[in-house]
Length: 347
Image 1 (cartoon, rainbow, N blue to C red):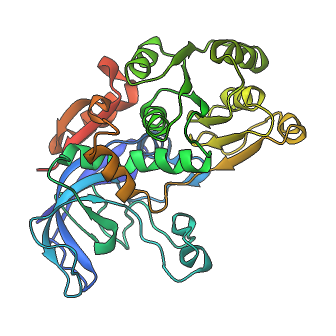
Image 2 (image 1 turned 120 degrees about the vertical axis):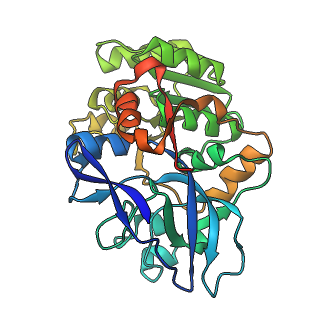
């Protein structure tokens, strides 16, 4: 029997069982290895929504994952049983204008988390998935690193949309897991003058150890004052800002801090509505762009880790067994013992 974790209501996680699924011709069956916990998981589990997406219960949980191929559908040629893979979650329709133009991440038919109609999500013993969304891991990339390919892909996609390149000056708001993968991505893409902000000193020290040139503690101050501090610390107004908190005041700081003609990427997801100094951005031609997941970023993320351009191992601070899923989510939610990235082993 297959076991998988399902959210039945706010704070109500349970293990459910069903027969191990068979595969369609284009699918593979995976024995799950490692699953990372994400901030969107926390919002769904403890609030019942993430951004402006309200959860429809029941909802299967888990999307940052790696596994081992145990069975291949009849048309699958690039994988075979025993291959270790990173899993790109979701399932675009592949035929709409967005999909055919390469923007499959915002396909309206895409399903990210598991629903009753689609079965288990990645926090499971077994999981079947479209084979072309499973990426073989080289020998020098571990299963744990494979699970972090998903959030790293978010950072790569965000930095691409922010036009980060050699010598870029970048402000990163938030030193949580997503802020840190954006830091790693920005550095790997050539950014040299990087400032990371956060409300926690401990997380800023981690950002510093992972390559941030500058760090800045954020207190309850006027966003314009904070923007001035950013300029003083960096010696310039940043060309690109990666806003990874979703907090209204932080987004406002990002607008005031970013240089005229620059770009702000809204990576973090907060409330569904915020009040912002939008005219300030408009008259200075500061572009504000959103990101949702990633497009065609997994091969790049895997290569960056395999070739030593990015080291994601320091992100993992806590590890749990499959039956400790409640403890894992509570630890991640509370930030207990300096938790940054929590990993559940399904093996």
